Length: 497
Image (tube, rainbow, N blue to C red; front, side, top):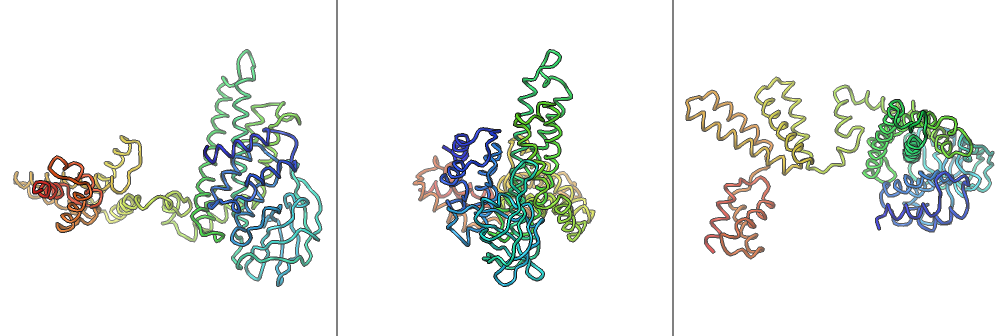
């Protein structure tokens, strides 16, 4: 059974979607026993491991502080492995004003989730011009009860010189807690938005009006399609942010991870707005009743949207980053990793295509028509191959394309030379030289022969009949080798056996 299926089985046994009984202690204990509350003390290594649990659990709108404890588990794993008996929460840095004085914290924190049932509080406290991540015991901290729009506990804490355990160095504001918690809330919102979409589709299929299901009406179909697009966009943004956090040094987020999280928070904010409006429009009056489960999702979407920084704060972070980088880097940041992490996470096999893209821009600026036409021909061939094969090409496949184009130039050069067209032959020679710049350095004759002899010995090849096997194995080890040169060496060695 896969990890995802195993988690889904546990959750489905504990929760019923839309169950109105929130926060039952037996459910919390069961989640903890299965290692879902503090996954980073139960063997999880990457943020994505915890994100999977949070995504699947949020579909049940369970009403327990799971996100708070998964985030705490992630941030505390380098400091404390004895979390199993604890119930943790966080203080939203955007609604807290806390000061660290020596090893004590004082201040006020608003909208703290589930504070009354938590044993420890994770927060960011200001120190000079920066702030530090600290952990406080809830014992002795005054809590004033409150709720968010979904009826979940959101308490106000008045903290007077509470003993603090400092968990990290002083860093610029905002710190790791702000961003990791924002990503956790974003993951929850995507799951909630997906659930609203599923409920709306099911309701539209079963609700009959004017003698037919309302799903057949074009206006309803358009609304559902629009919501599906918002869910998909938010899923992509959250997945990109989770991958960026996986790449970042533990508890020391880099700029790219922070900006990917801010981009995700902005995207899920749009999803929340659309999901609430469309979900209730599709369900009409029944969706507003207390007995219907839709409100458990839409109320949470509205509540979570305002937590961990208003959208304008995340938009400002992204905007300031873009301004600092300058206009020339805008497109690069959008598509090659300045904001989105997918390109950075790809293997180095993408480097050759990236180099072609960069060189194309340089050729356009320099108005170098020969270089421009050459690179465009390579990119066109790559695109056609990817369309034909329905998969993205790696460096080896791109290099094969370049070799084929180089061979065409060589043949054309010879034909133009023989036909008395030196000007066209010169153009082919120039393009051939440009193409060779994108090929790995070819191994010399000695390296080819040594590799072929080693392959022959490993495979036990004994005659020319084994030439295909030897060629395939040798070519895999000799990047940039000329096929004809390799074939001649293989044939010569096998013929002499």
